[in-house]
Length: 349
Image (cartoon, rainbow, N blue to C red; front, side, top):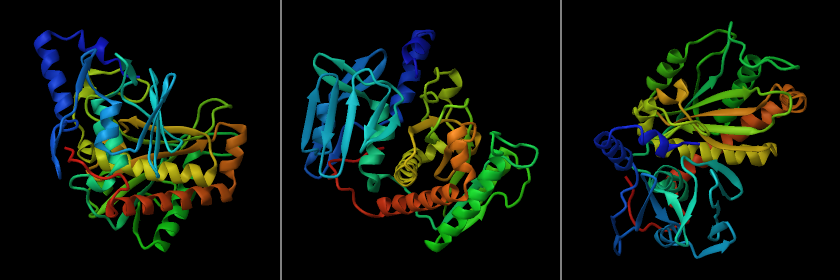
């Protein structure tokens, strides 16, 4: 988890102020014109960060109910339930886990959410149709991780590079049935550099990018995780903030689309696979930081696990994952086209 206070405290005061300004300028426009006038947020400063009150989030997005019980709070509507826990590094939206850039805190009786997480995570998920400059797409660039001399993770039943290629062939077929054009970064057991994969996406018009991988971490780790690019000024999930995290990547132009796409694919894959939910996370992998199109990286399970590795080895599992990713992509496109069930009260930037 990001330790913004410890990192920024090492900087000279004038540098720290400029650094904080750069971070918050990229986040939510907290006072914006709405159909009935402007909404004024109460901004709370803690440890050099901007936070907003959960009560204000309820009001802005017109959630009918805010419930609190001990360290837990819930925002509830007819279609969405968001659970917050004080000092937690993640939240749950309709029982799907999302890893935060900064933990939830409580001060003076108010539950506080970082301004960055509001702008870069909550807002695009709650109302994806208000994502500014969201690009329509009809093509999916499908990237099978690893290949050639790069086997990726190797488990008791096989190598990641073979599983990803097979999954991507299945995903291509599922996407074509849904009417999408497809481009595979590789169609055989060859090695492509990360830069070559990025270049394919960047030269493809009207596309999104999905990189498929499988995981490895001991013999007991299990579950599905989906990565979207970390916003500028935030760290990789569960990592310490580094000076390089202040750099803006090409992919940050699509922050809102990235998290909305990750949400749709992850949620649908969890539902179809009944996998352990390891969360929607943030990272700066080259294949998602260098592209100018919406992009995500899916880790479909752990080949290192004797249990999950056996599942991944079965063609039925890889077919289900491919169908689930395709369905999630379809849900993402529908979400951009259909007005969110949570009414708008303003605009974001």
